[in-house]
Amino acid sequence: MKATVSRKELADALSIAASASSVRSSNPALQSIKIEAGSGSLTLTGCDSEMWAVATCAANIEEPGAVCVQQRLVSDIVPVLGDDLITIALEGTVAYIRTAQSEWKLLALPADEFPPIPAVKEESRLSLPMGEFRRAVDSVSFAVSDDISRPYLTGVLFQYDGATLTLVATDTHRLAVNRLTRDGIGSPMTAIVPEKALKPIKQLPIAEDETITLQLDQSRLLVDCGSAKTVSQLLTGQYPNWERVVPTEFTRMWTVDRSELIENVKRAMILARDNANRVRFSGQGDKVVISARSDDRGEAKEEVSVISKNGEVEIAFNGRYVIDALQSMPTDGVVAEMTEPSRPAVIRPIEGGQDRFCVVMPMALG
Image 1: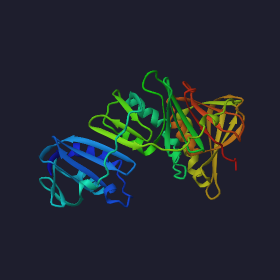
Image 2: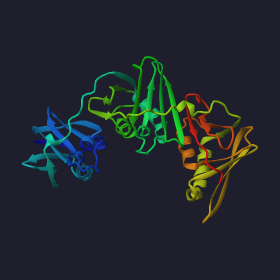
Image 3: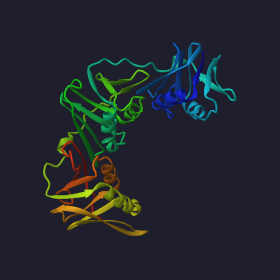
Image 4: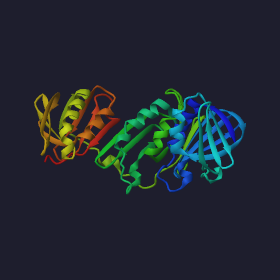
């Protein structure tokens, strides 16, 4: 195997393939990137046994072939090489990375030790613009759980009924929902897509206005854009009935400037971090007093103007959750809907709030 390739194109392809590589695996093949030379291009593949990420870049192929090299090492080397052209060669059992001024000798694994990419049957299909997909995922992914004892919560629920695509994420302390009304963009589907798989999908080299197609079977998701693709295992398990968590009525409401509220809560978080991120919100007429305290460092109070509807209530939330919810909103104004201090609140954008919202569970006032 011997190929010459642009450093930038190789680095871009490597970043996509590396997103699926597992540096923590005890299997050397899963710590590697598979590099295949053939048909005027290099194809780079990363895999962690549950997900595959593949990227192709143009190259001058002198000798076709394939090799596996350690992902972390090659990811460190390629971006910092000083020349524009890089030659990758397999000589015996050793892989070389060369430029006009540099030579790196890397231990290599046989390409046949790398896990093959599984086939994905087209049992369900969904298409939408890449920009819309990215924004929809970003609007809920902050609420994905990292609790590996409940793996079905470590992904985003995709539900499409032929007219509405609903994305949901929850870690049981908060719930994020985004509904997109799009008739005829695919066949009905329900799937839990791992959050770690959504990251490389968002990185695929597709312009915002180009269409992305998700192809699913009972266990896997395929996204293919020609020069790059990902294949991921879907998560199994029964996703919670999230609609039961969403309050159906409220008696109190604050309407507030999103950016101003974010800055106030961020300042309160300087002390709230010492107290489980607990931030208190006290409605007082046309303002909300935001406070936090630390037994060791003191107390902070901030005020923000609001339009209040029966909003004289004192309630506490994890300040980090409030900031995440506010930052996901697309409008300058947001609405917080509440009932009592022990009941969850709903944060919505001032426009389109029926289709995009976040439910946040309260904390004890302390």
